[in-house]
Image 1 (cartoon, helix red, strand yellow):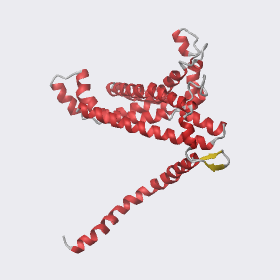
Image 2: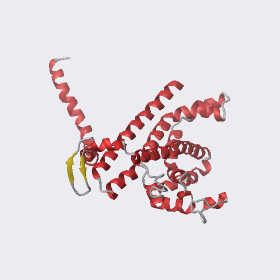
Image 3: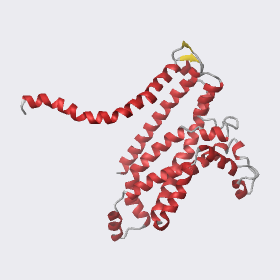
Length: 297
C-alpha cells in the first residue's frame, strides 16, 4: 500500500462512518437527556439528605448503610422476587403454547392471535378493574366457579399470587407474538425433511422447533424478568401494598419513601440499589441461559 493511501485511510473511514453517527445522534441525545443525566442526578441525590422540595447536606453513603439494615426494603425486594418467580416462567411457557396453537390452527389463526393479544392492549386501569371484579369475594367470577367466598386480594397468602395471575392474563400476548415470530422464521423444509424420516409430534418440537426458538426464549426470559421486577401499577391499584405489606414491592416502597415520607435522598438510594439488583439478575440470567444452551449443544 502506498504511503498516501495509508494517510487517507483513517480520514476515509471517518467520512464513511459519519452517516452512521448522524443516524445515531437523535437516540444518543435522547438517551443522554432522559436516561443518563437523570441517572447521574439520582445517584447524586442518593448521597444527600433531601426532601422533595430541597436538597440538604451531603451525607455520603449513609443512605446506603441505612438501606442495608432496613427490613422494610428487603421485604419489598423479597415480594418483588416472589412476584417474578410467579410470573416469568409461566408467562414464557404459556406464551409459547399460545404461539404453537396459533401456528397450528391456520384457519382461525387471525382470530386466535387477536383473542390472545387483546388483553395486552388494555391500559392498566382497565386491567385492574377487570381483575378486581373477577376476584370479588361475593360477586366475583373466580369464587363463583370455585364455589367459595375467599377475599383473594385481602388474603396475605393469596394476594400476590392473585395479582400475578391477573398480570399473566394481561401481558402474555406479548410473549405469544415473540414466539410466533420465531416459529414463522423456521424453514418449512426442515419439517418436511423430518417428516420424510418419520418424525412426528414431540420429536419435531424437540429436534427442530425448540432449538430454533431457543434464542427467542432467551430474549423473552430476559425481557420478562426485567418487566416483572419493575412491577408497580398492579399492586398499587389492586392492593395498595397490603394486606400487611405482603404485596408492597420495591418500586412501591420507593414511591412511599419519596412521596409519602418526603425522603427523596433515601428513595433515590432505594432506586439505585434496586437498579443494580435488576442489572445483576439480568446478567446472571443471561449467563445461565447461555451456559445451559452450551451444555445442551
